[in-house]
Length: 558
Image (tube, rainbow, N blue to C red):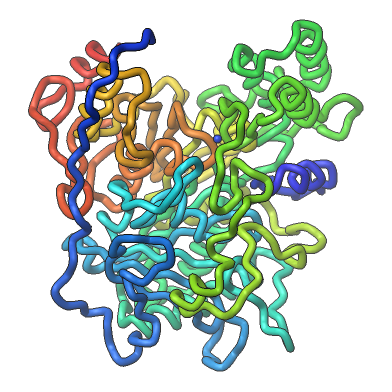
């Protein structure tokens, strides 16, 4: 969601409002080497290409401006109910995986907003091809989630992205119950069309999808129908799961103090904003809300009291100092990076890839005035549904015992401590909150990409490395993780609001855990995939790989 819209929404937040979100010394230059990349694996035959699905098949070599084959995929729209002629339809882009472990599963990705297109997640986070900020053309993605599982990106609810509402009788969304029912109707049609009934279903997303997904998953589980709604787990990163008072305002000054050198605000402002936070009771509230185990339920502070809208004033002050301050990734500075979608690093992009008529035609999408985040008619009077952490999220935890909540530490919209406090006030599987501090628990380990050697070589040989963006991702001990009673908490140190965009290897590892491919997020070892466009293996040594130990890794990388 755009910053100006977000700020307005924060001012108008109601009692049940949930946040509406939305980046050495010079050496003599030498000849540049080129890292090895492997082509995407192609399947000889496909069980998904049938007379019913043929009309959805996408030409992998015919995607405008993409000069390589993206592989097998299917795209188009399907009705939100059992009436196939209903013009209220949701757009999807489905990518089958070549991973044998994915044969009986499918993973859904949803962006948030509300009203933001899930094609953002595809193009800029973890799709088979990426066109990220600061890159001049699309490129294959070595961290594509399709290497792990069958992936589907869905624009929902009606009115989002390439899912326009019917002109004569548009579907109305008043609350999360409407969202869930609409989505479930579409999903049944998709599972039938692609003959995937009985498959395990995982739902992933970020931001306001932290509100969508628990409600959708809970509704699906309520149907008691594993042919279509066999939900086995969910993953929500930097999620809207609670009240703005808890997620944004209460932890705002503490986060500012922690990142003070990055914000670079003057001493007078820092003194005054800390005094205001203290007077508003934010520090006392955080001390209570971050006690493990919690002593009982706690009440959110009053953000409407005079002087207590501290987050808004911090963002304004930050923009005075750094006009390119980015709430989604607080370490960004000017200039903005050019962005094909104009989000999140530009308010209005010079281009709009999915608004091109040739792109929409290639994807079998209806002619649409596409915007990455739009539809002012969605929740016109706000979303009246309680935050997902009140009921929907604990219900899903209890029925799947497989829920991941992730947080990027550089997100200044939905802050890490805010998310943790919302979870600590939640009761699931018979107890409230966490029994111990998740931020002082196990280290979150992400395997090293072998192409990191190329980056080191480039950096050693010249001051400006030539590594293509997206080719590699950081590895090592990248955060903290803790699991209790079916809920896993994980932080990513260098990530902002969109974890897969900033630290793709960490997001990839989280998905491996959600799918049950690894036992924990703290285990040391390689990624489970060594095929397709991911090049994979690393030489065995005590610091990473099958023979590594956590103590050796911590000692080496300390």
